[in-house]
Length: 372
Image (cartoon, rainbow, N blue to C red; front, side):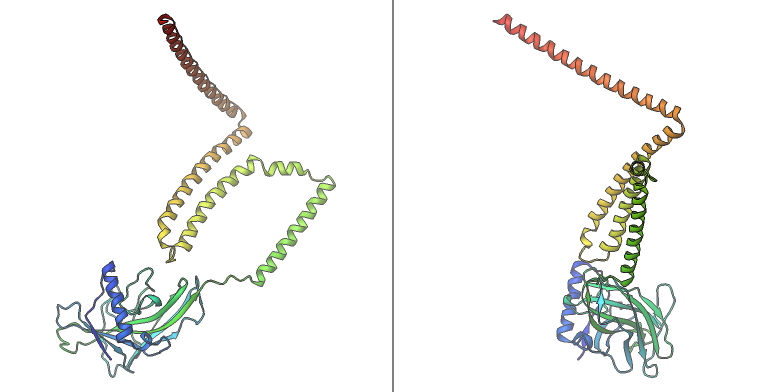
């Protein structure tokens, strides 16, 4: 069974997306074939777009099962068990019997004419319609790997890609495009575009967090070292060889806490930025909170740099007090003088305000007495 569709790559506006979804629904229910009908089918689907004139940029597309002389297949398919956040290398190929089909090189953006001007993998969420080569790369609908180009080695062209998907059920198709001479007027009309796809279905599961034997071994080694260090410190304290109070005072002094505060504050902002990039971006369920995440990231950088600036001046004061006592004392006296002047001015303003209020109250009482 064949279906004729007049199509071209549309801008992914809301209305065009609805048209593509409706077309995909029709394909899956009216002209379903191969993976469009049976996810375990291994046959390939061909979409041939024939252009009727030199000015025709849309053409008429005819879909059907590919002949045996045109075959797309997975040489290395995604595994049956897939997990979120894991990259899976995939190899796929297109075989065209050139004794039957004439291949016309197609234009590419930067690599010149190629016998296969486009090849990549589409991963479509299965619950949202059929997966075809014409479904654009759209968050929440379909994910594409970067497109590849190449030439046939004899009758076969092979390509590679990497699939990394969030949790859901997907139809994953290997899409390869090539061109044949126009059957109506090969000398004048553009060559016929042939899109070939083979598909399979996969469930992507949440990532499994398992603890390795190496992690247990490392924990045991670190624990043993900590126990040994603790025992040595306890023995040194008990025998009077180490002043524990001095050590604790040094650990929590400004010389240690202020640099630690700067490092930890900036590290928190950087860690939050990395979590946005690695966790929020690329996750279709979290894509809508990206703006608010970046807002809070900006606020975290502002507050972290302010705290670091304040801590830096405290560290500078410590440095001055240790290495340049005269300059430090002069600065402290200046700060104390400034503070005293501000407090004196504030007190004077307060007293002046009280005197004005008192004068007004006395005048008001005197006025009432005279009236009485």
